[in-house]
Length: 120
View 1: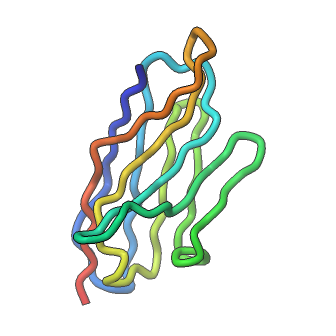
View 2: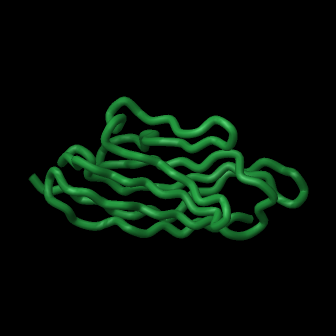
View 3: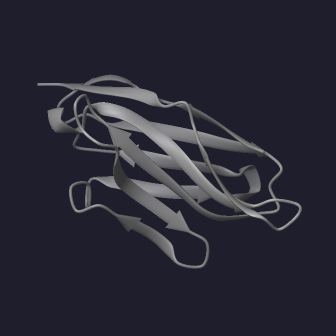
């Protein structure tokens, strides 16, 4: 199994910045992709960004140009640098990792979520 630990959420004023981190551990042979999703009250969870091995980053239109996803493969860690934050970015942010385990089985894991609140 893969465990994910997220950190970096908090309260920030509109226009400010935050950096989220997600560390993966456990039975990981190789990571295929690391992603961030978010969910605000009364809304479905939505995709924010993905860093895919061999393909690089991709972003939802709503965050393109403001958010940057990056990976440190030596630490099995993914980051989400969030700049020019808006109140509508307020949500619980979740990390997701798709990986192959030691048996070369593909699996997905979710973190516990970290709250990001942007005040106007």
